[in-house]
Amino acid sequence: MNILVTGGAGYIGSHTCVALLEAGHTVIVADNLCNSRVEVVDKIKQLTKKEVIFYQIDVTDIAAVSTIFSNHSIDGVIHFAGLKAVGESVEKPLAYYYNNLVSTMILAEACQNYGVRRFVLSSSATVYGDNTVPFVETMNLLPTTNPYGETKAMSERILNDIAKANPAFSVSLLRYFNPVGAHESGLIGEVPNGIPNNLMPYVTQVAKRKLEKLRIFGNEYPTVDGTGVRDYIHVMDLAEGHVAALDNLTEGVHIYNLGSGNGTSVIELVKAFEEANGIEIPYEIVERRPGDIASCYADASKADRELGWSAKRDVISMCRDSWRFENNKE
Image (tube, rainbow, N blue to C red; front, side, top):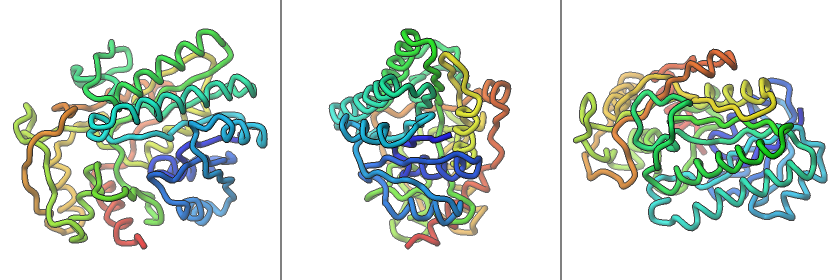
């Protein structure tokens, strides 16, 4: 199939492009490069020995999106493009609502106009709000604790309503947890602009001595050691989950958690990194961030049951692959 991947030069998008190409699909990438680099597209080609069609556009631009749909016979869309930092969303809510919701609506409308029936949304476990763990797809969604999470919940509702009005439109809503790691080659991984918002690239930059020490946001949560607990999933497991969702997509709306099903605290992840790579990570405890919750991990049994997908790579692999990528970065 010909698959349009928005945000395909980004962290999760680039790894999914590799998985799609290796599964025999053709990939068209649309990315505005606001938090990614065009060189990643060349690395995807290098890894897979296959071509990638690339458009540097913003998917909130109706005309630019229409051009892609006009130029190619697209069979499906995987929509990653969007702003994604929880803390920043609290500070800049309008930017998040505009970017993340308008892009979803424009892409969905293009699908309707050009007869594209497969749509996979990069959603998030943040849509569950401060719910009871483990999170299950059948839960009633609580109000999220930040605008980023609200944009994902609203995008889900938009696509649900479109699918109700257009029964042939097939949607997979992938609620995933905390992606970490990198491709085992070390060629692609997470490259944030400035000081990282996510834990693992912060850890690797401390290990590289680019940053003095890790800041851990809060140690008074009701968890095993007081630090936040998250469900860390290797980015290649996550990428393969997107391919499984696309390949098994049938009419209607399907919701899947993509996670390991295990909770790991921040300090436990730091200790795993030290064990995997033999490097000490100095850290300090600072105030909690607005919008963070104590624990977040998945019940991922539905994806296993319906898609034949489950996370295979462990936390040690995530830490080793992240460090390999950090050392290979230009």
